[in-house]
Amino acid sequence: MMEAGRQYIEFEHIRVPAAVHTMESFNYAWKEFETRDDDVFNVTYPKSGTTWLQEILSLIYSNGDPTPVKTAFSWDRVPWIEQHGGRTQLENRPSPRLITTHLPFHLFTQSFFKTKAKVIYTIRNPKDVCVSLYYFSRMVQFMEYRDDFQDFVSLFLSKDIMFGRWFEHVKGWLTMKDNPNFLILSYEDMLKDLRSNVIKICKFLARELDDAAIDSVVEHSSFQAMKNNPMSNYSVVPNDIFDKKYGTFHRKGVAGDHKNHFTPAQEEEFEKIYKDCMKDVNISFT
Ligand code: A3P
Image 1 (cartoon, rainbow, N blue to C red):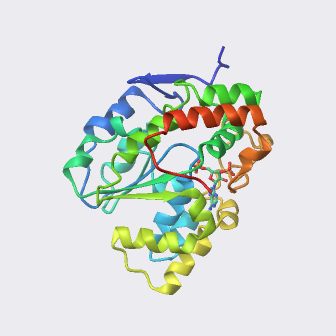
Image 2 (image 1 turned 60 degrees about the horizontal axis):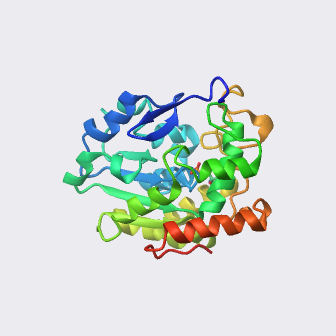
């Protein structure tokens, strides 16, 4: 049984929290949204670096000026297209629009494929995604949650997990990998060397930032800077939605936290499923 408030809707076999999505908002994102050539999509499986990219993109488009990230909420600067506010937030927004989405590839905005718009897809080690989602689901009162971590891993590996399984999400999006308007980033690689990833993003988006501007993007999108930025750390969201007694949105921001959570048996089972699902895909996580 799901607790009241933690309700989901199902759109084309994909389950999402009913608090922020409607059938109409999903349909708008998939079928009705008119993509412009200069739109930029920040695409992720949940808990893979979505908010990080929202910050980096905002800073790149302000040429490193931190004013926008200090004065406007991340979800207003780079809104989710599939959430119920998507239409109002994006329809009349001046270009270039920065747009966030967790949509799986097969439900992604159809009009995108007729344009020169760009997609940045950020991938994170799925075991760390699972751990991050476990804590996030506990905090966010409208999300499906299992108290026992073992039970949560089972939910994560099932088709009932929000936005569908990580494996299908990643495999779907990787079919775009040879498209020149598609850039893949790795959360782990960004942790290792944020600056060179910022430069890579600028190049992909044809944004010419000088060294000082790049430095500013890196400084203001660091874990600590974002954790301390009320415009990006969700601290203003009331406790009945994000219950802060369970922690903060910026939790650890590290690679490998799964080692502190998975038992050897769970790890083995996860690896088996991973190998089976990802056998045709060549990616690795450090
Ligand atoms: P943890 O829960 O492992 O700490 P998303 O934005 O997709 O919801 O992902 C949230 C995860 O990204 C959280 O992971 C969060 O701490 C991490 N994160 C957010 N901003 C970050 C940053 N600037 N650097 C590193 N990790 C960041």
